[in-house]
Each structure stands twice: as structure tokens, then as C-alpha cells.
Image (cartoon, rainbow, N blue to C red; front, side, top):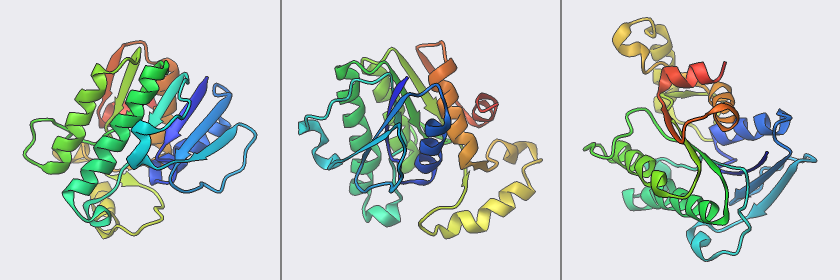
Length: 215
């Protein structure tokens, strides 16, 4: 398969890119990015893009599968409006271009608790995007909803540093288990497997489903 990836410099995006380059099922991997990944590989090509202007770009996006892991935090974005532009608009607009160009599959990184009717801004934003991409022209859409992510981020997130060990310690508790942390490499493996093995036109993988998909 030929794949295109956005969000390749984030925690999951970096792990996913490495997984795609190692997986023989993928012959070409194109990264659309705001800054270079600094990786070199025979299968890899990069294109520096301005996602704010992606709708007016002339980027060729006819691939077998698009992987979308773009996202930020409210702290980094500065405002809810800017976080919406990054987490929702940039991903949806790029996905729309890809689907219109003939890309067959979308694998989208979402979040636990995503719900278009949620009163929580982040959960509602993710839920609305999950629903919106269903209406695009992809033959298959896979929504990946992990919980707290574990891995080595480039940016420091004190909430994850504090609560990840706590969540691991109490992951055996039934009510907490569904929110237990999941490593970046497991999410990456699940996303590649979704592209290769999913048969349904639309599927949502909650946390345990993500673990199972990665096997």
C-alpha cells in the first residue's frame, strides 16, 4: 500500500512513521508536515505544508490509506479556537482533499471519551471530527480511541508525568481499567493493522479494541 501521514512529529505520529517504514505491506510513505521529521528512508518522502492553507493547495493525495495523527494541547495552541483549527479543521480539510482525490482508507487518531454531544470542549471536538469524516468519500474509516498515552514526548506534559504511573498502578480496578495508559508503539501497531485488516466500512476502536487490534 501507499500511505500518507499527517502529524508525523507528534508522539503517535513518530511511532507510526517508524512502524510504516518497517512494515513490508507499505511500499511508499509520504509525510505532510510543518517541519521535517529528519528521517531518511528509501520509502519515505516529505512535503512541507501550511495546513492553514491546505484547502487551496495542489498536493497530490491519491493514496491507498491516509493516517491522521495531527493534534495539540490548549496550552500549546493558546486558545480553544486555535486548538479547534489544528485538531479539527486541519485534519478534516486534509482528509477531505484525500478522499476527493481517491484515497480509499482513513485511519484517524481520536481520543477516549470522544463524543459530539459532550459538554467538554476537547471531547466534543474529537467526537464531531469522528462523525464528520464518516461523510467523506473513503471506502473505509477506522477511528482509534486510546486513553492516556505513554511514550517519550518532545514536549513536557506534567499531567501525563504525574498521572501515568498512578493509572498504571490502579489499572486492575474495573472502573479505571478502561482508562489505563497505552504505549505509543501499541497505538501505532493498531493503526497499521486497521489499514491492513479492517473489513467494515466504518469502525471505532475503544481502548481494549486498540490493544486487541495491535496483536
